[in-house]
Length: 263
Image 1 (tube, one colour):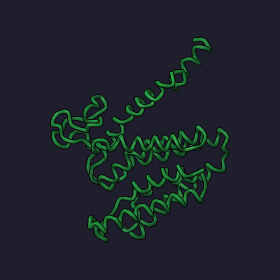
Image 2 (tube, one colour):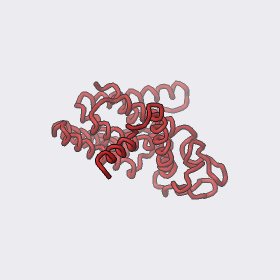
Image 3 (cartoon, one colour):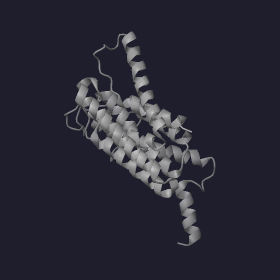
């Protein structure tokens, strides 16, 4: 293939050569292609702690997989055999994905920083939905989120940002995770869970990249959001003082909002 042919192929792969009207369609199709894997992750890991990961419909046992994604892993979220609901509620994954894409579109930064943010958001969507459903943050989602974010930020450092922000991100991720884990050891159920500590690895790295004040702002915002929701549930008599709210969704939401507010 000639150099001109390579450039043409590259533009076609990125949508650069598409007409302006076609670009939103290409992006929409790409976003829809991500829905089945995200729904599969939620369906598989949204089980009580200690349970075996789900591989089929909870009602009839029909297998669930990417080889036959519809309708179980589509917006309908229904088992093809018994029509029971599978995993997250209809529209929940799609709405969360739309919010993540909005954050990615509005967030600034270099290509490396955007790649790290996109990677973290892709794992954060199923993590938030699983934690909200069963108060669980699976290691198989938390660890890849943290490792990929850390590695992509390292590439951003090599591309020109320099070692300082990457070292700060590393220290922030480890420090936040150790801090969360310490509350578990000292306070038990009244502290953060170990799942929250593993989620904090990626959150701390991503926010710490932009500075210690950004990390602190994200943490304060997460605590404030959880407190407001808890007070609302108490006022509506939907929860008691002894009730335990999952902190993962608040930490993920606060991280996304902090990224939007970061200059």
